[in-house]
Length: 317
Ligand code: HSE
Image: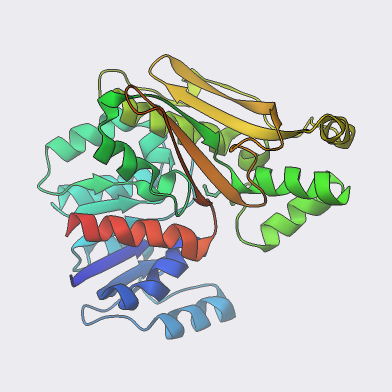
């Protein structure tokens, strides 16, 4: 199905959306980063845009805000996640919906921090929103919940941060120190713009907040303040060695239900489904009549997360 995309954010995810759009039969009519925008109603050339961005840090000659007024069917919001008022991402989504356009978010901020405000905007718009990319990268967690019926799922849990999981896996396997492995994760493009979000558990907690909001179907609104969060910064290498001696390992586990949200390092058996390696994520859904569903896959990275964005575009058009 063809369609025109305006992409806000030119980091790993925004860039991959622009580069993969043609393969999905979409035309990118606008791209913006924090400094600049490129706009062409006939379609932009990804190679020209990113050659320029790599050379001088800008994607085009226009102001970033101009992208919001371009011709598009779907606005893709892929700017970095911010906390609290979730700006400027929230203002971008608002502009798209007020133009009666659809919006797809990769940015977790507006969905985790202002879910109620977002739903009010959707109600008043002819456009709709989707946000599969905000939880678990390429894993179709939210659409699985939607298909299964949120009312038949009691809880979701899993490994929801690729950076933290990569660090724990490498520390355990190679005996490497924490800072060394974090630098590797940043080089791979899986860490957040602010990697403290990854290692302190904030990113996993935001994903759990989004899961809780989706499971609750608007009966209750959750935000980051509702979560109890511990990260992996205080997990010593020795703890990983001790766990291994006992056939166990440590994973940063997030849990979301209508009763609350918790994120923290947990000891789990090495043969548990939750013991995924590297940047892989897993989402477990506890269902009322069908036991436990496990969905696992690549939870971070530009092309991986872009596939979730582009699938959402397809669901909306
Ligand atoms: N930085 C995140 C992670 C990816 O490491 O899993 C985006 O949510």
